[in-house]
Image 1 (spheres, rainbow, N blue to C red):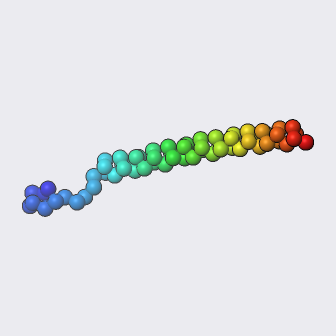
Image 2: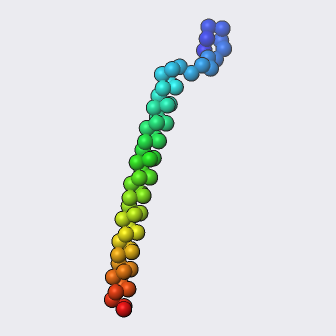
Image 3: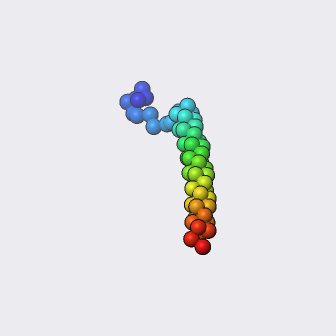
Length: 60
């Protein structure tokens, strides 16, 4: 509160920088997670395709 009893509604640069840093860190973590999931999905898809081909060969 200020000297006249009113609430101070300004955001300090430190709080703003911390929030921006947190958002940036979250974005980096989410991008990393999405890349990891994408790579795992690609690996599982490749395995399914390979096993499907083997099964087709056995049944032919």
